[in-house]
Length: 114
Length: 111
Picture 1: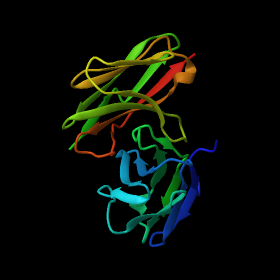
Picture 2: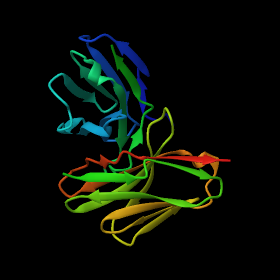
Picture 3: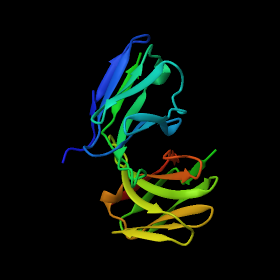
Picture 4: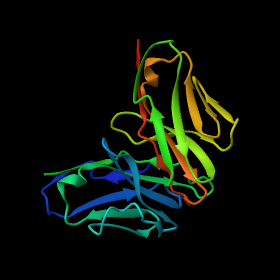
């Protein structure tokens, strides 16, 4: 079975540019989570969805960040405009509602903003 | 606000040398404590769930235990393939499905 798929795996962009990260969760999973991981702050939850509906976006750092889940098999995290402090590894994870804590993580997208 | 503190930050062991990792937590009503393993360049991988003080879970050379204030991940006779970063996370009663992660312990097992 395919796990969580993320694209791109690496993204290098200049400050001010728009960045879109993509995620395909495991089929049948009804929870989807977006995390950011840095050396300084560790693994932080940005937002999560249940049945395609955003439930908790309190971790989204500011209005420059937005996330959507138009259907059960696709989600995007967009940063516009990007800043150097956004450089991090962004993970998408999915899980089943009966065990939402047992999250299956994707390989991550390493974002570098110069 | 839920908080998780892990110690030590890094640990080096010789193969076969048993040890423990610590996870201290502050949470308003613990719904669950979770251990994940993360290999370099990969996403975290779920290991264990603990729900109440006194509970223990085992998987191969790993055993997780839970008290009212902390959890331990005991590693018995580790092998080099156990080298990874081990993350602890908690879910509080007011957190919904949000997990709060600690910063992890980076374990290196030398052959």
